[in-house]
Length: 333
Picture 1: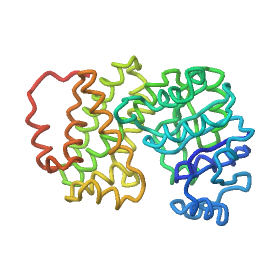
Picture 2: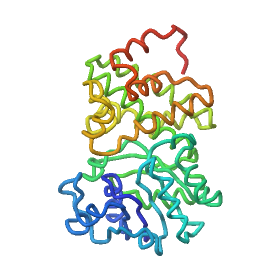
Picture 3: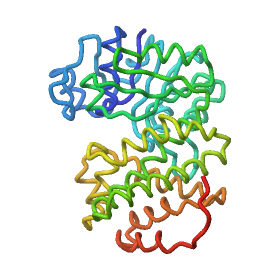
């Protein structure tokens, strides 16, 4: 297929590289002129050293050029940037039956919309059935080294799901279709907040037990909020929820986990983001998730406490006390 790829960050480059290895022709779009020039000239991403990309990928600053003749659109921008990007896409004639695969993970602030709903709102509801979500436990560094990876593809249409899954599937990259699109999207978005909490906990040297508790109760928070919107509980216990949670909450490769560790050292949110040098989706989504949980009256104590730290209202050690001193009640799952 001819594929338009929106976004050329490390993850976007990694998946464009995978698609190219599978024989597809990819035109990758980015607004970052220096990055596009580097990628076209060196064929290597600055964050993925020694991972050259094939010649059937070209990089462009022109969105119209990327979309021209495309048979599939894949997105890897940011959760904050997805609306403005697709507002630009809307200005260009786009086939209503074209598959649109989202790989970003987040919830839009203020609107509380999960990302596939953002895209459907911008493009029109007639595009909804062709929007799918790729998520699961995966790092660009590992996928670019052809290490075994399994992810899930949320899609409303089984035929579309198979088409998109086959486009990505390789000998080391396995894609499982799932009809619970919002469940897949919620899992990928919310686990980033819990990863920040685990990074803070490990940074404070609170032990493996504390991290295990945060992951377990964090998963409970994720399930509670997602189920309120009709998501299947088992989806959150699958690759996009529990699988991604386990990966992201215990690895220094995770931006969100590393960001949490920096916060535990007394860094401000601004300084910690600056040191990470790449987008920390959990910091953005934490605001959205707490806004949404309050709107639907579903308490999320871990996410609410992380937000207080992000806003500089409490210190990380104070947060431990707040969580440990909450009213005792029966464990529910």
